[in-house]
Amino acid sequence: MSSALISIPKDRDPVLRVIPMPGDANMYGDVFGGWIMAQVDVGGSVAASRRAHGRVATIAVNSFTFKQPVFVGDLLSVYAEIIKTGNTSITVSVEVFAERKLLPDETVKVTEAVLTYVATDDQRRSRPLPAIE
Image (cartoon, rainbow, N blue to C red):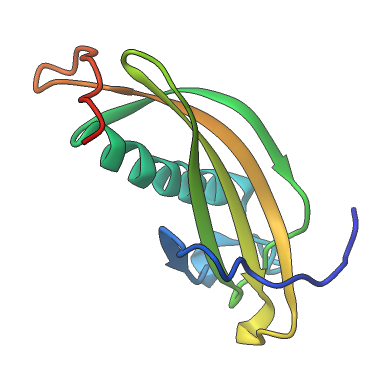
């Protein structure tokens, strides 16, 4: 586990920013992996929903790597980028960076993941993605 400090991407905007609270962590202040996974899913779904112009459902977590721990009080920035689309599916790469205790000079990549979503209609059945305008 490398502890190299990095900068958050300047050429992209985060789809989500959140600060974990004590209820999101164990008694030692380490944030639960499941809580981080939920934030990654929310962030990925933002990009997928925008591309689908509506409702999406998570159908696969293709990969998920915890690179560094997350602590109560870190400012997490979640970045999502579409890397592949199919007829109904959207695959999204998600990266999460933590500014330690709101100190921008202490920023580390804490998580990276790839998730696949499917566009769904009002009955929650898959539907084709709209054409790109």
